[in-house]
Image (cartoon, rainbow, N blue to C red; front, side, top):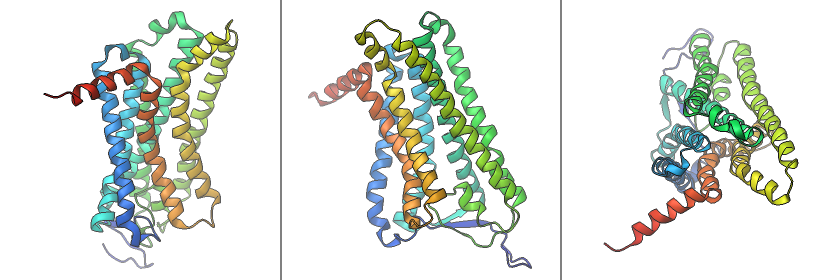
Length: 317
């Protein structure tokens, strides 16, 4: 790297701080974080394996669940290994290209996950409001196209973020990122140039993804609840709503941590930095941990298959 005339750097790498203010506790913090990451990996891999072998789960909702599991694995794996390396080995340095790649994967697959939840809401809408057309509308080809659309949307929305940083913001005041991973705004705030376009684009993508997706999902559930309320008996209503419970829980698990982290970032100016960073890490870890639990608890076929595997593994050979 070299020093420019206006005292700004052209970096080839950055340094991540991990959890700023809690450096002395990094080794202890590694215990819950490594445990949560292990739970996320085991839980999502288990969901993928169970859906693959259980033919009764070869349905649109569970194909979408597999897509969500892959997205959760990418999200957690894009951050946790580096964070644990910081905790265990003090490996804070990250190359510029690796930083931009990490930024892309984090924001891209968070966007993909939101798109998959939207596709799941569409599946529940068709299943409840248009049940006679569900099989003809949500074919495997359509499920594949919806999953591909969610992925392409993530790539198209988030792809410009690292490109804009690479092309528009070559100079930086400092190399130290006050975060545990290369979050978009944490990098942009270090830049020397005009960051207005980067800020506006980042906020615009946040609006398109979180606000519009949540509004679309809410609209689908308003129509679902209206259809449910027209059913003749309370038992039928409860049974029908039960088919949506896993999806509703997963949506809350995904959007609530993001909303809390975003509100804390925007309005919690008096909160210690480590609280912001911990919240940002939790919103990348909590959904990958809880989504498999939610679907394992709420889905009979998944529970039965898991119990069968556990029983088979416990029998003496």
